[in-house]
Image (cartoon, rainbow, N blue to C red; front, side, top):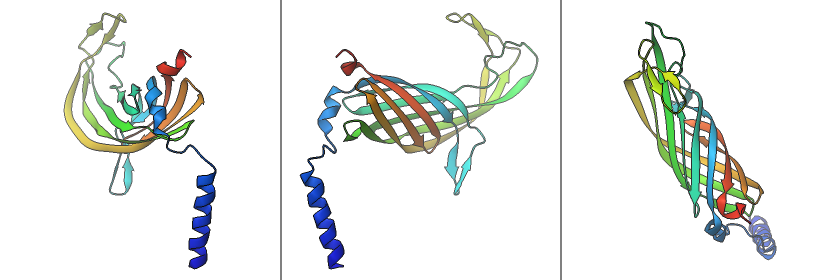
Amino acid sequence: MKKVVLIAVLFSMVTLSAKAQWFDFSQNAYDATIGLNLGMVGYHFGNGQIDKTYSDFGGGVSASLLGVYADFIYQSPEHRWDRKVTQAQYDDHTALAINVGYKVPVLPWLNIIPLIGYSNETTGKTLGNSIGVDTESHSIYHDYNVEHRYNHFNYGVGLSVKPIKWLEIGGVCSASAIYGNVSVNLMKFKD
């Protein structure tokens, strides 16, 4: 046991003498990012298993300022933007996840982001005979009526790397979503 303690003390002394810049929170003073998220949203862990009943591909946005991170990812109903007008009512679902966290700069090029947040899934019907027009994209959409909503506490972790000083590439794995992220640091982009 004494040998293990001695080796641990020696190892920590070597690590401290290496002058590594671990956990340099001053990096967050130059953090102002905006990015896009793409990935899977809508599953959740329960009873030791993953429930993928409502999971599907989704998209969203992320932003951070001074190390405080927030993101959003959403999956819309499958038949909402269907161009076909019909009397059918489609069984559809949605899912979303909203997270907040704080960037912990492990190394100058690596951040770990503990996250907490909210997620939900809804089930309902998309009405094939209802028509609305999106004035910005000039496309039609169908109404989606929510029948059930399942709310969850969301938690997870994110990881981001900086291959270039103004670009961050990362990923998030949480209790209800797994997705990738590409962000631009606006404060370092101008340099």
